[in-house]
Length: 254
Image (cartoon, rainbow, N blue to C red; front, top):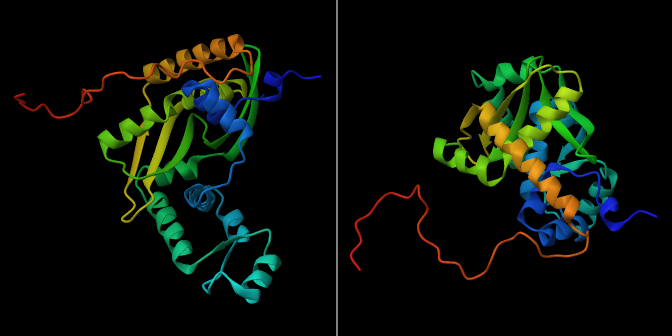
């Protein structure tokens, strides 16, 4: 009989990110019914259109009528294995894919990948993990992200807040176990709204090393957790908040 904690493994980056917030967030991630949001579906389809275009074409179909009534229900039933898009949604996805594939840095990187959507299963600190790497080249890992803003400050903040540097550490370790002697980690970020700016960044090795340390710290916390308690390291309530350190300085007279 598995313990409750063992039933939550293998861990993924997403579940670890939830645990980094609190055991309560982790339990919610694992146990609460999850309905894929429109933004999540859109991001998945953008990934597919860029990385696996043939699969994208085979798995989508356009319906531009009202999404109600017997005619639509029959159409939906006949295409139960496909994602149904409006013509505008399909156009938006195609525009984003073209922006990435025609980008002077992102496009060649996608074309240099040897494998896409590469699944992996590894152990770290004796705990099973699994995930899917977007793209693997001979010497690099490609991670495709859709986001709201790819300006330098905004993307830097997104990478930090969403702990993508820890994801890089996990995926680099997986690539190492798959036989890659070394791998640079590139994030290709594209804006989900027009005009769909694209930015390519390589994460510095010391930033990924930070992610590795945070990963191991989380796994130590995971091992110490009883698998049931919903409270832990989410922080104390009632703390004072000031403007962030990166906010522009202002002269304030109170």
